[in-house]
Image (cartoon, rainbow, N blue to C red; front, top):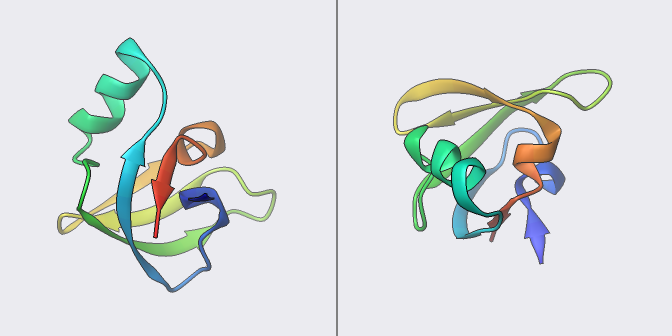
Length: 73
């Protein structure tokens, strides 16, 4: 299982599954991250938090904990 946190900078990945429950999962889905969507990893902050990505044509910053809940391929 590879997560968004482990994806290389400059790579494009596809979401396979969202882990997490309830409000946390709903918040990730409300940001446009759903199964099958492509995510481009733009950059990662020096200490690994946050991760900056492009999803559905807009830029988004995700906390490391949230990025770990997103399984990608």
